[in-house]
Structure formats: structure tokens, C-alpha cells
Image (tube, rainbow, N blue to C red; front, side, top):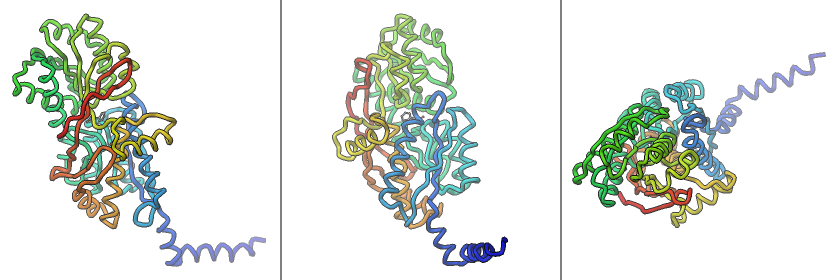
Amino acid sequence: MNLPRLPVLLSVVALLLAPGAFTAACAQDPIKVGEVASLTGKEADFGRFSHRGTLLAIEHLNAAGGVLGKKFELLTEDNQSKAGESATAARKLVSRDKVVALLGEVASSRSLEIAPIAQTAKIPMVSPASTNPKVTETGNYIFRVCFIDPFQGTVMAKFALQRGWKKVATLTSVSSAYSVGLGKFFKETYLAGGGVIPAEQKYAESDKDFHAQLTAIKATGADAIFVPGYYTEAALISKQARELGLTVPLFGGDGWEGEPLLEIGGTAVEGIFFSTHYSSEDTAPAVQNFVKAYKARWGGETPNAMAALGYDSAMVLADAMKRAGTTDGTKLRDALAATKDYLGVTGKTSIDAQRNATKAAAIFTVKNGKFAFVESIAP
Ligand code: PHE
């Protein structure tokens, strides 16, 4: 009864073992790229936008035939916005899935977890949006497609000085590499420009009550408050400042950009300022084409800086792969390091000797419950 089946089975085995069939099967294997993102938890807004931008790029690349005759497969791991989870996720992607490169993360502290794993495995990591200098200092396989915080801190310090804010208090998250770094770089330029910092208050990620710090700041008569944090805490801080009768402007960096800033902050975030990486209102064709494609793909949602940087991170990686002619980690690293004037959504990406990019910053405010573009600051 089973006999007639045997020849069929044998021919399948023969086909699988034949070298020609083997090569053909391999050519169909996709190029696996890993992504670590905060899809859930406190910074889910970062993860949602960066993931949607990254996936859109992968889809565009595949629609154009992929690279090296292969399609891409994006393998995404969620770190739940929790400390420690990004390292676990990166290890899984490297050891289990054998990805050829890692994309992510947005938050610097989480990129700092992933970077040593990519470096040890000798596969490139491209962070879309982490701005702390230490991320790429981890090693020569670690890249980013955004500006770094010495620039962002300078931009916001000059902005404060231009506005005539002579005394700016700071409120920094001690448990975030991003916050500590951006606070430090802001301080250097602001003091050098003649500003005075009457109070340097601290908080930790996930804190909910900032009344003590804000009361201390209020007593100093500061003209404004710089909060280099993420949107959840920035919104709560803004609300509690207004409750305490503090009417001075609050301002921050790219970490403020997220829909929850508006949802949690409500009227308390009217008139705040923050710097970020791009504006969807930019009339450059690269931006408008991206905005159109993103909106069509993601239910009409307007892409923010993380979406644009997520898109560019995957595109810059694919561009390097084309030039390298291989997915070999070391050759891919070399090609990434040689990236020059790659024109993406967030402007031109040129990778410098420290594996960072140099790009303009965009300053936003909140007006009538919406983010509103103020100005662009060239590097
Ligand atoms: N730059 C932030 C960090 O390094 C992350 C971020 C980027 C947040 C872009 C919002 C927009 O932690």
C-alpha cells in the first residue's frame, strides 16, 4: 500500500540534495534584518512610529525587488519600554534568527543595551534616533542616522538665550542616558553664553510626582525650565508646574515628541518648545512623497521624526548592502562607514568618523492642542 509513495519520497529527497536545487532554494531565502522597538509600555509611541517607518522602508525595498537578488524579512522584537529587555531581544535576533544587521532603538539607554551585542557578533547596528554620543562610541559596528546631543543641547541653549531666558532651571532624569547627556550639553552652551542655572533638579524614569522639584524651582524665580526627558514625564511635569502656579515656559528635546504629550499634558503643554529631527510640513519632495506613502500605509497617520528616521535607517542599511555586494558583517560595516550624501527623508546622511550623522534640527511648539513647526536650525 505504501510502496507507490516511495519513489515520490525518494525524488523529493534527491531534489533537496541536488546541488542545483540547494542553490535555488537559498536564493529564495530572505535577508533577515532584526529590529528592537518599544512597541508597548511607556514609550510605545516611539516604537509604533519607528517600527511603522522601518517596515514601510522594507516594503518599498521589497517592492523594488530587494537587494542582491533577495527580499528582506524584518524580524521585530518588542522590549516593552523596559530596561534589560533590549539586550534579551537583541541576543535572540542574533543567535536564534541569525539576522545580518540590527535596527533600533529610539531611546539611548536601550540602544546602549543592544550595541555591545551587535559589536561582539560583528554585525552592524543602525540606530534611527538615539542621540547620546556613547551609543556609537560602543564600537566600530555601531551607527546612527541622526544628529547627536552635543548639537541638540547647543540648539536648545541658543534658543533659550535668544528668547532672553537668563535663568533656566533644569529637571533631568537620572536613569536615562539621553536625559543626563542632553542636560549636560545644554548646560555647557547655556552657561558659556552667559545664562544662569539657578536649580538642577532630578527625577527618575516612571516617576509620577514632581511637586517637590517644581516647588524648589519656583522658589528660584527661573525664567524657564529645561526638561531633557521623554513625553510621559514631560507632560506630567508640565501639568504639575501649572498646578503649582508656575507660568514660565517649559522646553525640551526630541524626547518630547509623542502624541501622549498632548493627551496627558492637555492645556498645560500649550506654548512648550522642543527640538526634533524633521517636520512633515517640509516641502522637499523626499519628505512629501514619504508623508503620502506613510499615510496611505498607516491609516492616515502623519509620520513624525521617529517614523522618518526609522525609514531612513532601513534605507541607509540597504544602500550599504548594495554597495557592499554582500551581507557579510564586516563588509557591510565598511560600506556603512563609507555612506556619503545618501538623500533620505531626514535630509542627507553622511556617516562621519565617529559613525554619526549631521543633520538640521527642527523646533516645534504646541498651539491649540497640536504640534506646530517653529523653525529649522542648520548644523
Ligand atoms: N533621542 C532620543 C534618545 O536618544 C530618542 C528620540 C528620538 C525620541 C527621536 C524622540 C524622537 O533617547
